[in-house]
Length: 332
Ligand code: RAM
Image (cartoon, rainbow, N blue to C red; front, side, top):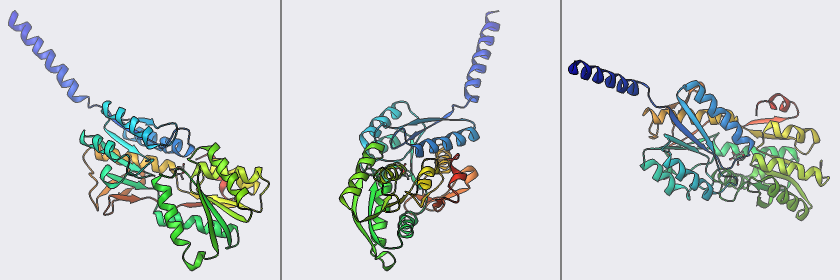
């Protein structure tokens, strides 16, 4: 009898263990954004959730500091390390300041991928750019030149002074301004609104008041472009100063109608969030490692091809104006 009971107990224990082995744990992917409350990242989150749903065994942890600082992101990553998430996808507030903490995460077996705004090469397995930086920089100068007939004073209203992505695009714009094509555009100031609406608005007002001959403000940030357009309207400068840069159709349609903005550009932030989440899953499953030349499967977006620095780029930025902006208002 005793032997029968023991055998039964062993059988039950075996079944329980087998059950545990069979039910593979879900994959936890944390999306760390520059800051919360930014519509651009809300759209990226939507894409992350779409990828998770499609993959079936993924939970997305959407998080970020309230203000876009490296310190805020470091604190969050520390806590994600203790939670032992499987992967972190991050849009970085600083390329280098985050490296020690993201390296620590990687040493603990967490896959770290950056998207949108990159972490320096040592601190991530790959970086997903929305589109080639040269294309993004140039596009914004073209839109500014178009809006003002090719010549005049321009200013840049950026996000934070440490933002990897904006700083790369500003670098491209400054180089392109040296070429004959843009010789008649004169960059008179670069200011930082820190991706906060109120600070961006104040900086835009400052530009308008201290540069009476200003013809265009380029804001390579969805927060900045929205605030700058509002400033132009409030200062009664519609028709005299044009705002362009990178914006969300849902936030910019009204400004296109008011005339403060003729055209602006952006890529699809939902696709970006979808692709980076999908890519993170591939890293967790051991099907990608970030090697130069590697191709990473990203579901409905096809494949990402990594370059020598472990970077990949998605589609060219798309231009919006009064003819097409309304079609996208409900999407992002
Ligand atoms: C803001 C953020 C983001 C950038 C977009 C264009 O939402 O700064 O990083 O890619 O603008």
